[in-house]
Length: 373
Ligand code: ATP
Ligand code: MG
Image (tube, rainbow, N blue to C red; front, side, top):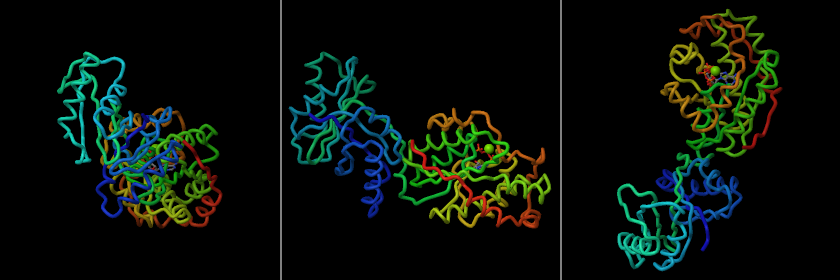
């Protein structure tokens, strides 16, 4: 009896004509991540079991949940044997939960539940509890095979990476932006990560921190391209030209323009930020208008409606929080007013701006890394 994982996806199943494309992307992602044999079945994906598979599958966007257990033949005796094998060592109560997509199977779901349940009681002496069992034995009766398992895991959900196209995600090293990048991945985007850093004030530790964040994100996406854009020269030009109160907004506009240059090079169709409305001075509606209008591409802030606590909880869940809270200085806090403008007006800002040349050069001088999870 072969040990396998049976993978279920959510929304992909409802995408009509695109369904095959979505399934293929998900299968590619599973193959890349697990190096296991992956087979497409009707409405599900079967993965050959290898040590550590659970951890890997639970990080692949597009997977809603999966079971780990056994594949067996379309007959009730084999299903019973598989059910015994799928049971954990320690439990007192159980139930059997059968779904049958193969309507030619001679027993219906309720009959299978009864037969297998009675068999388990007979062999183990354990009790059935339909409302709050210690263990559930899931049985999926498909066209050519039956899956039987009692280990079931939640996946990330969402859509396979790449089905929505590519985006640039601005990663600051704070708590928010890695979560935002993750959200974009979860909706099918392939993320190109971009960080702007001031070489003089930032120690190698910051570079290391950003790389570690990218590595964490790569556990979900697979390989990530990371641009480390030197921001110092641009920043000094801005300091020279712009009054302190407006510098924060101009830094962010400058980042937008550079993000657009990178997007063009990489074929990306939007810019992702970690902005959350009204969280800090740069995130008032007025400032967001002024900042985002520096971008030709759509700017998408997935966290816009989330509270800080919600974002922190998410960061902990995906594993970026511990890295994000490592101490570091934000290049944006360099030479800005203590109370930056919260109601910037576009006409007050653009008159200071003529940074195209130096921004282009900064992008050209980026360090480009391929980061693996
Ligand atoms: P975060 O927690 O992501 O740092 P924040 O709430 O501190 O966000 P800001 O520091 O104002 O907010 O930054 C808003 C967004 O701008 C960030 O989420 C990120 O997308 C982008 N950003 C800011 N600084 C940088 C930077 N140095 N490099 C790349 N992106 C940046
Ligand atoms: Mg920040």
